[in-house]
Amino acid sequence: MTHSKQAAKRVRTNEKARLRNRAVRSGLKSAVKSALSAAPEKRESAARLAVKRTDKAAKQGVIHKNTAARRKSRLQKALNKLAAAPK
Image 1: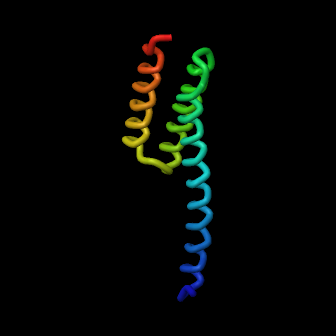
Image 2: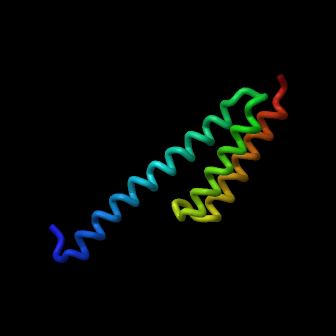
Image 3: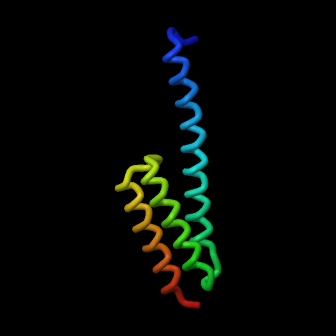
């Protein structure tokens, strides 16, 4: 139980933010996974969506901007590796 109305409101707002952040992170992970598992002809658009979601998450403060940069770099590196793999 909280000690004040202000503390109770912070608990409510923090819970809303936590759920919103969790949804954004989940969507981000899904976009990255779909980009890595997409067919070669659809890989570029899936990667673009993953990068877009990563940038948006960083802008919203869900993840740090350096974390976003690192994730985009690793994603691109993995995609380049897939593209170079023998068919």
